[in-house]
Image (cartoon, rainbow, N blue to C red; front, side, top):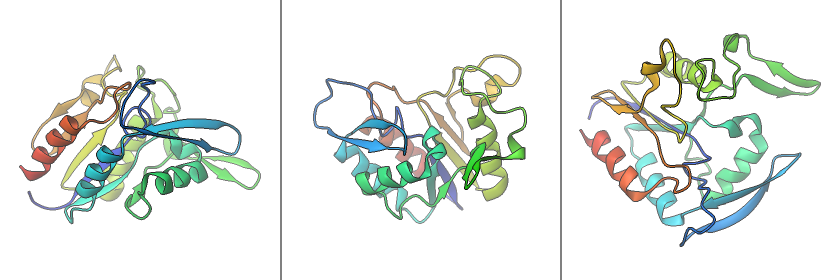
Length: 189
């Protein structure tokens, strides 16, 4: 364990699980200014993740579709007790402005919403995070990793190396203690 490790978290399918029958969860509704969204989380998993995020060698933050609704993401942070815990929000292809969304030119050609395509905006956001923050090691946990195909897709397949932890959670189950065990072991290595 040396230097700073960036840990980028998706929200849906990671902290927000999609199972309707999950036990030991809490539920709430968050409004993004236009729509209501159901949020389901496991408090014990959030607490454990928060402990990992508090490590001095970890720089935690969001790489999530919720970036397009900053106020709703802030509400989610409060709801889950993550206020002040997340140290960054990854770049998003648009920024809400007084007269509509402002396009981020760094995303030209990377505005797709499908994780199955190489123009998925999250791939570009991940690259920008690594360029901007220059961590010694980096982790990204997302239920959509590993679906892309085509030239360059292998770069985003779930895998663990000494300096990279790309991990796909199961969207229905969301983040589990066993997933956090793997992340913690990697952080300690």
